[in-house]
Image 1 (cartoon, rainbow, N blue to C red):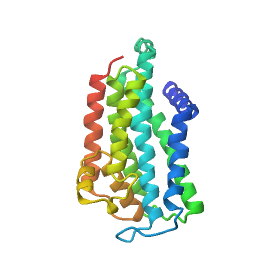
Image 2: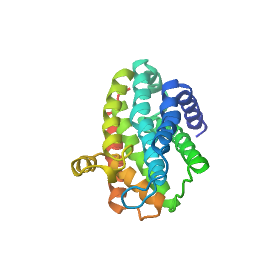
Image 3: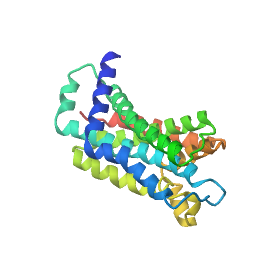
Length: 241
């Protein structure tokens, strides 16, 4: 356990020290929060305050960035630099490696999420989360499902550059169509229908529900759990050192 904890600590330090990862996971969402709320508070259709919708949305943005872009790029870079070949000679298994990488990158997402919540509380009158357990469950399952997709990419892609391109190709359509950047209430019917098919949509919906105190949908929980199990299992089986 001590060895895994050391790996997690080192990976988190590397992620935070990498300028682009740190900027887009920690600073960029705060800038987006300011841009969205600088015009003043205005409720969305349905009555939810803009800040109470925007913070959970941007939290999923942070989780998705860490899971779909930074995580697979890290694994692929290790493959490209033959770090994984050296790890193959140790007792480390693919599942152990995946677990350590997932925890380290989700801790980066925790930092980004905490920063958004802290600024929302201090400067924008953020309320909630009304259902703390529901919001935490949504965050965790979102991290597991999106992280499993990121691990699957990292398990197969041979280079860090290719992993980054694939990760960004997955990330940007998801954040814009699933409601992590644009509130789903303001989307047209066609955009919402496409967004419903995105793996990020259940995380956005579930976290927003938990934040305002609505019951987290069992279907969203089930979808996220299924994605995590299926994509995670495929990633472990398909992993190449």
